[in-house]
Length: 379
Image (cartoon, rainbow, N blue to C red; front, side, top):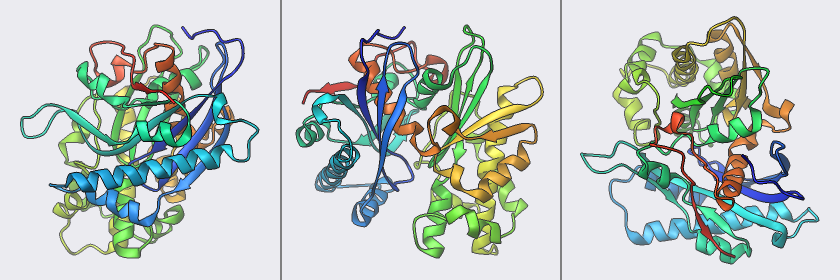
């Protein structure tokens, strides 16, 4: 149950996903039992130097404390700029913001541990500095409490999907296409658990392969992928990765799906454009397989598509091809354009934390129970 409020409460969510393309800032309002409302947005570009440093850290076997501190400091400065630019055109001062929900930048996510060690998830963040720079309370470190409770700490967005998109008159199926793809199934029956899990890579391999061969950070509208041909033999080798056969709950990240993983499956005879086309097909097929795992009965489906991948025309064509009974639709119909669901989720999670309300869904993450997520850093 939500905490009643006499007037809207304002929160800012900051999200930098595995695509590393920038920091998304979303201002939301929460009032009584109404779904959260999106009021304003800002996309703060990731400086090239910081982008390169974060990519290095994501794939480094060893790093220095100085490198981590430098990356964290630069990332926090970028976050503060995002907040400043978000509020600049508004008649809303930072003193009216209840809290900033900061996800931080994921460097590695290992919910099953590594080499026999304990489970861990690492997000670069400095909420103390962010509170100092912005003059606003910050809620951060959302994932590790779920991990401590035996969960995978991901995905966390399905709880927000439920608050935002859940309906009693219809089922809802939500697909987020960020660096990785995750699905959320919201049943219209109140006693049915929410189901959510990662299906595999979305943009992470597409972006990396494009940067390697074409320069730039992403394949605009999937034009380069569309110029190639799908290599069915390569696709079969990629889909043989055991992750795709795992039952939910499951989550993944760059620690598994990266360029070195891709190269292990290449014969050396493929053209670069054909590999790009095949990577888009990998995303589309693995999403379709994930939906099959849900065993949704009935006829047609409505699939709400969000995230940067929703702007990739070629990828959306391939999804439509593999999901003939699904109608792909935008969350803009609910007042939330494709790019802002994730940032909005962490604004909402900040509200949950300040009101001592759970932020995870055990049916999604596999945690032992509902938990209040995140730590509070006062202004």
